[in-house]
Image 1: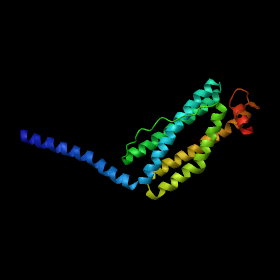
Image 2: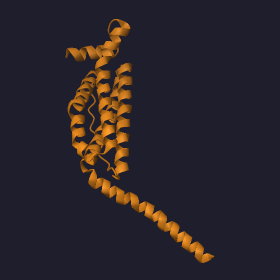
Image 3: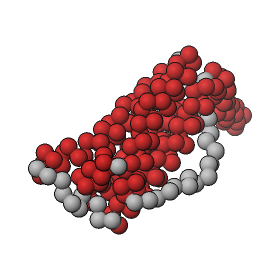
Image 4: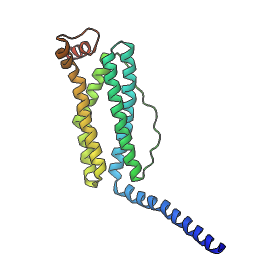
Length: 193
C-alpha cells in the first residue's frame, strides 16, 4: 500500500511539474513569434504608465489652482491611461514576458493652462502618429488580442482629445458664457495662445 502511495505521489509531482513546463515552452514560442508585438507592448506599457502618473500630478496641480473641473478631467484621463497600461501588461504576461522596472518619469508640472496644452499636443501625437504606427508594426505577427487592445486604446485616446478640446463647448452650452474660474477660461486662453 505504501509503495502505491509513493507512486501516486510521484505521478502527481510529475504532472504538476509538467504543468509548470508547458507555459515556459509556450512562452518561448510566443516570445519568438511576437517579437515586434512585445516591443510595441513594452513601449506602450511604459508610455501609458507615464501618462497615468503625469495626469495624476496634473490633477493635483489643477486642484491647487482651484480648477476643479480640470482636476476631474485629468483624474479621469489618468484612470483611463492606467487601464491601458494594465491591459498591455496583461497581454505581455499572457505571452510570457516579464516586465522590468523602468525609472520614474521626469514629469514637468507647469500651470494648469500649460498642462492642458501639453496634454492636448500629446494626445494628438498619439492619435495621428504613435498608435497607427504601432498597429501597422504588429499586424504581420497576428496577435489578435494585442491588435484589439491597442486599437481600443487608440480610440480611447481620440476620446481624450475630444474631452480636452470639447470642454469649452460644454461650458458655453451650460452657462452661456465661459466661467472665469473653471475649464472654460483655460480652454479659451489655450485657443487664443
